[in-house]
Length: 284
Image 1 (cartoon, rainbow, N blue to C red):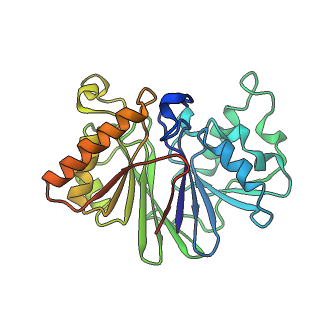
Image 2: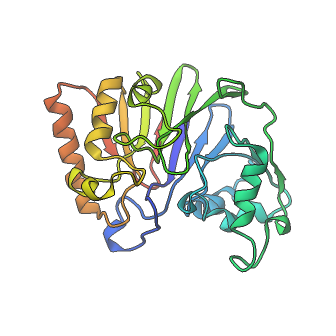
Image 3: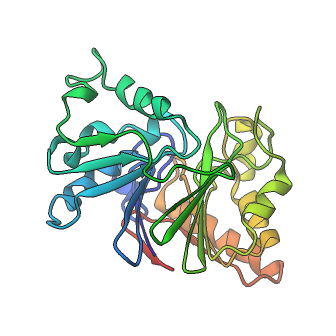
């Protein structure tokens, strides 16, 4: 399984000199199975560049989408996704825990007048708003060699993360998850220790430092320290710090990574921690 980070910024795209190293596009992941299955999670602004890359591939015409939630920074790239305008593409929206109508509604709403000049129905791709292998009661979708499990997170208006399993390797993704505040409908903290226990790679929300969190508690995002502590407690092997604050510069992320690595060392953990970077490809 290959995981490519096409966007890792939180809340707002932030192009400019201060974000060149780690990237300024919002959440979007491309996942490729060993047998060529293509999955995209979330449609932030990073989706546009990914779409341009995909149209150069002659053989890849079927794309599966999963969404964590419908906040704007996770949807804004879809109207600018080049394959959506081509009739030779099939876009299948495997809704996971979301109802089929919900996925279609929140994509179409952002393209309704006066927000966008074209509506969803004007796009040329064959768009299928149901999975060919629907999720079971335990929220596990199995298609070909991949197993995808959705799980609830702590975030305003709700949301989901995903565990993706292939050939015994486990990747977990929770881009918007507040570990130190309980939102309505969200799980207890111990739930995340269990859901992330022993995963090979975890990419998790780490938007704030502890000082910032005094003002942003309940906004739906975690601190660097809480994310690292969770990963250590769960026995995660590799941790990618994600959902970078729009005001966080590359230099500040470098500094925060050093703090996280020292925290890991002081805990006597072997956790490998890194800053998620736009364009980075990780292999499991």
